[in-house]
Image (cartoon, rainbow, N blue to C red; front, top):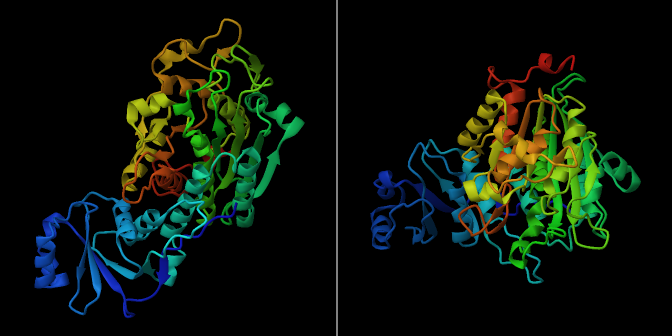
Length: 482
């Protein structure tokens, strides 16, 4: 698949004919008269416009043109998504958005693009929607690159599983990263079985054989000893649960089980387009968890790449099996930061709901950098503990470790602890458990696949590697001699 270009922007200037949408706070509604005139302001009052965040209203301008109002949150609350409401509510045409001076232009552009996103395989083309006027500089700026990366991730998650298997996901990674200058290897067959035995074991039940993507890139300002960032993504293109079969209701959204790989691919693309001064490695485990005569069975025991034997306590806990070989290989390079993203556990959703990806990290400084970035970007992450007291819940009577806990509690934590067995104790490591889906449509977040946390992760990486915070920046000296 090729990456889609957001088609909701138009290059222009304030001097050309255009419609105007005004972003208004409830506490600042007196500015309406200044912006739209007394008659239009009275019209807005009569229509019940109270500037509730996301509330929109079309109203006539004195010159006969259509204009619009959008309610936005009170400061200091930052919400790029709210501008996505305009992409759905405005009629076709070129639109300028006027907002209070403290509103970031980047948020307007990003939110509008995310609100304009739609995924459809219908034979009839959709109607032309509104376009946001931007400058030439903005058309190549960070906000649009963020939107492109999120559109890419959303498209991958939304794609039906019959159209996106392990091979197609691996090719999508190649088509995304190679044109940006990355070296991309796709491992399959006997080479994959030897290097990633647990990935192979998960995928052996499907006619669509697994693939592992390994990509490498170095920024133009990065030397050979520059800090190394290693990204790992779970790419289970469809998860039936295996012999521990999911109920039919539990399978309906399992095309999204590659949401971690989609998020990592979007994040890698964003890092490369912004040319961060680092070395980057990306690993994606692309696989399908199916039921067949050759599928993995409950209580199978497999020797991992790390040498640990793993008992398959439940075939529906396959994501951690896909990740552990990749995490171990990534750790062999002693990266300055190892980051994995996965749609790993329902337990994380029970604890935090769909909007809050769970973040696990034993290093407080690194965790703080990610949480602060999530607040700064209004792209929330929520930290949960890797509680060592639960570690022995993963004990097995016949193997070094079981892939499921012996107790029906703390499932997101024990999944993180399982992964931690394949990460070096001194490795700076972040694990993110994401839902990668919107259950309903909201401004900027249409129902379907998504990549929550991608903006927070990018900002955290930029902070850690680019020197924005001298307390936690990963300097070259921290990676030398490892």
